[in-house]
Length: 423
Image 1 (cartoon, rainbow, N blue to C red):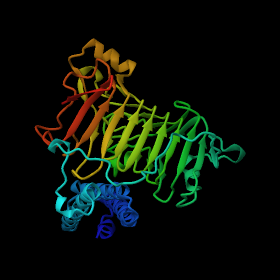
Image 2 (image 1 turned 90 degrees about the horizontal axis):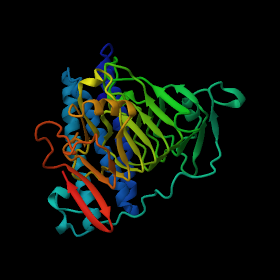
Image 3 (image 1 turned 30 degrees about the vertical axis):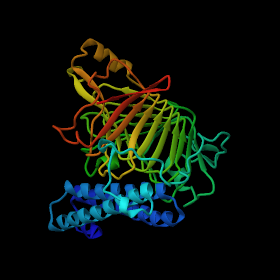
Image 4 (image 1 turned 180 degrees about the vertical axis):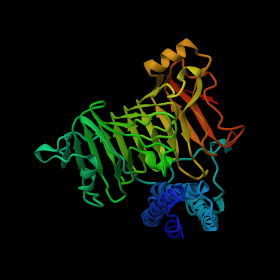
């Protein structure tokens, strides 16, 4: 169905992009559903829920692609089919959640409930999540990337990724990226698992691009300078940047769909939509993330620990004033096991932004987040908010959208006393 749309879209750049993205996303969905079916008999309920939840993300994104290119009866029929597919997947995800929480006691199974219903989920029977320890030490590079290509180095990061073996699960494939600025678009496909990017330090090893929404045939999904699908991705000592200039649109520096990924001591630079934590389970440790509009967003289960979050000036008329939201979580279903958690992080502005803020603080407003989708979920734990964060804390998306279904909290733990501030 979607391949037929692609074949009939010659000359229509937007519909062609929508179809290509949809084909990739439905392939990802099929893979995660297949993995779910394999996990359940092994008692890996948490994995099954994570993967089925991700499959729903991809189906929704496929449908959403065509929402902006729905100009034929064929695309309209495809969107109707995708709506039905999402309902079926949502039902399956709800049953997986009930099975994980209540086991075989089917009389206790109910439609999914959330924190807003007073439901707090226990650990369930999920078993091992597969993520242990931090970034491995004493790694030996399998391949090296350097600017001049000397001494057997690859000249581009993408060439090094392409050299990784497919579906390698027994060991890491380590790519040492030497200091330098690599102006390229990098894609790590689903079959390239356990790839490790080892740079020479933030600001020294820089991967940069400038794709942005508004360019022909480019959607937010496509703008990423680096995009990862293969599971088990790790990175350390790298700056990921999207240097797209004004006019300001969505321009992603890094997009991840890598399950159980671990990123440490990395920097993410952009403006709107810098870090797209799109799906599955991700961990960010001691990273620096910079942007202004919804610059940490997606529908993953992501933990940000000891990270520095920096608001930067808008690219157009920065002195005029603005409403910035740090996060925009995209949870679309109450059974999806997703949400953003920030622990021991600091939220501040760049020196350039703070100069603007201090000159006229009433017009420069910054918020911890806003609900991109109906079941948006964001929690800050023991984080330090500088003066630029408004007392209100959170920003509505539009009117009262999601205000009764979202879950957003700022939690401080002091002397074993739990103090919750709910916005």
